[in-house]
Length: 207
Image 1 (cartoon, rainbow, N blue to C red):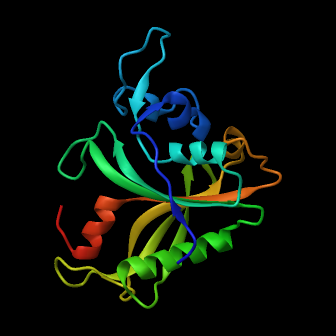
Image 2 (image 1 turned 30 degrees about the vertical axis):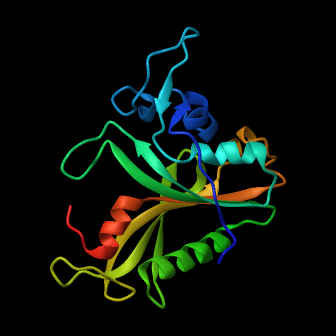
């Protein structure tokens, strides 16, 4: 209803699309072997990897499509993280909007509409907290109002509790440049969340 299209990309990525183009500095912990599944280097010494997020699709889309861009990116992601509450393979979905006039107010409205539709409630209260992600500036984390007073049940759109559901922010100028866009001409916002976790929250599934 909001005019978004679905975008997809490869599970096996390059360091450029997964890290460099998304403004991850050299030496960032996410680029280490203990966090990321790397393949053996090829004859040129370059290492492919299993993507750690769906964000590389943002760069690939910018490279081949002129703004305005309104996409939703679902897909599998991989991290060396396995315990009682984490899986080495999990699903993410993220959104990207790029236009000449994209702004934080637009982003808040889109996220509110998404949460109302996903949690099937007529209204939601959301709280935005400052955070940090390499690919957005400013970066924010979003909490949604809920009621957790009943054991094993979470009711959204009511109550006095808060639960974190996603991260978001305005696309960093360096990311726009890597995508071939002029940050003086275009602005964008993006958000992302774990599908597995948000589905478990909606349907009251335990870890």
